[in-house]
Length: 179
Image 1 (cartoon, rainbow, N blue to C red):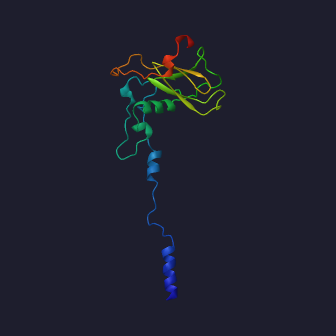
Image 2 (image 1 turned 120 degrees about the vertical axis):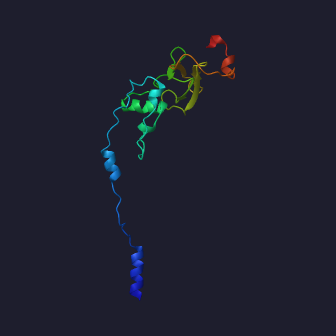
Image 3 (image 1 turned 90 degrees about the horizontal axis):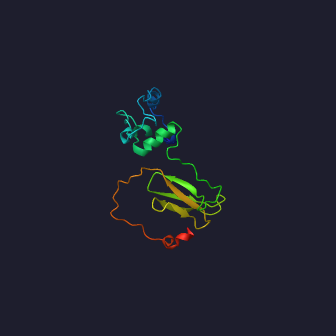
């Protein structure tokens, strides 16, 4: 009797192997998959309609390239061709920007944020500076470095801002000769 109970206890604790092992059919299908030959390169993208992915075949999981659209798709296509579409290089922190020679920040949008860490780099905590098309120059309050936004987007603005005026700051009250 004791022998039967201990045999049952051991059988319960033992790992039971499944009758059917998991197949690697998905890996074989993925390995034999044919690459998409109608994929457009970065030079063939001319309009917004070129930035829509083909989607995945029915019954499969789409890749990022197949399901992405818009700017995300443009970035992925650019990375595949070793083109940095959004110019993600760090800003020049080897020098202190001045009003005569500011650190240039390129932007394709109406406004851009830049993080100043001081000169030399990492000499103070990150201070975020906001620049816009109306106010393209900002000065770091900690180290005094000057940053200037260069707008690289379309020159015409199709948005109606309903008479919005940016709130005044202390910089609006500084005499022009001090700039």
